[in-house]
Image (cartoon, rainbow, N blue to C red):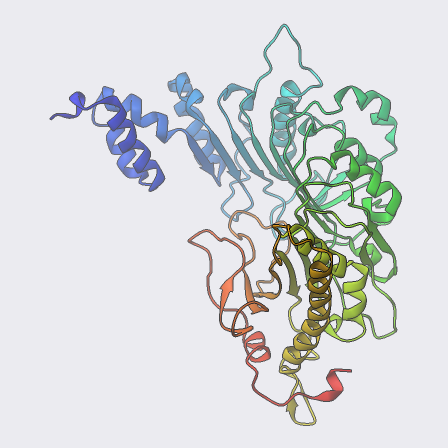
Length: 517
């Protein structure tokens, strides 16, 4: 049977297969075969566009101008300019995003966001063009007479920079927060609401309350005031994921205002999404490294919150200065089944610090809650990389790294005591007719391979790989073959962690008692 006689559904399946296997050359060959196949192949060829240079972007624009219907094929657009290949000397000619009526996903990286990238380019012209497109598509200009553009846009990722420095300035009134159909938004290195709120009066934004369909909001290395966070969290009708990673790896500046500075106002801000929030992640900012403050989270009224991730848990300084800490108020959220502590300092595994961390975070109550509802509970501890005190340093001619394993064993004892108490409480309270059996709770210790990269992780860097080296439910506990805790693309590094962590978890070598105190 000749190709033109094949059922259209079968031809579409062939094209889908070529696209999924990223066989672009085969799609190009199909497009050059005949006009009949060309129409079908181009739908898939032009559905995804990824550019790292302006020259390739401009060739794409010329192809669209030659056949305007091709613009309707675009679903996924990635402008990845954070590479040394970016040809900043070319004249600026941004895409008009509103021309791509079926665009579903947009990723944009500034060419100036890398430390060694050329600064003072025409990036601001591109940024302004994209913002104008978002403005037209937002609730700020929505009209019943004119159908707003970008109605199909579901996902936006913006790794941008300012015209003068790494950070760019916006307010809660920015159109990126007011795209009515958008479901996922990730931005990095933004100063949000740092000016006085005169430009965005709270009363003025009340009309946008619960008017967007946003499900996921990720703010990475951002500086956001509590007033701005409160306003932004009022817009979604049912937010499910909130990731707030405040500026930590970049230097903070005098005048920076952060959302976690006050417990009461922070809890009030996130409570606006209490009925729908399932995933909450907070990575506090660097200004409080020596502050000794505590953010007490009140999450009792979050009925579907299942994942809580907090960090960093830095080591206590030599001068005794207490670091910023988190606490979880009781009653605890009834659906919480995963608590993860990031960047956990090795010395925080010691007594009595470990006991205090578990007490502050109401781990005993979380375990009891898991038993009462018959749901599994996981406490994940993601360790910092070994400090110089442990890494390749010897005390009294003894390797210090095996001490880490002993510290983990001691930490497990504190967890186990609370776990056993929760099981006793369950059997004392449960009735004979109850269908809830004992829950399966566990402690896991995670490590990650040093990469000397800081957030945000751009397109050529990829996410960190975390491996589970200790699992309290595994027969070995200290795993001979650690498994990966997070899913990674197939082309990412899948090698083992660093040699120091291999030694630390191996169980070989003498433990120096001085390092356990």
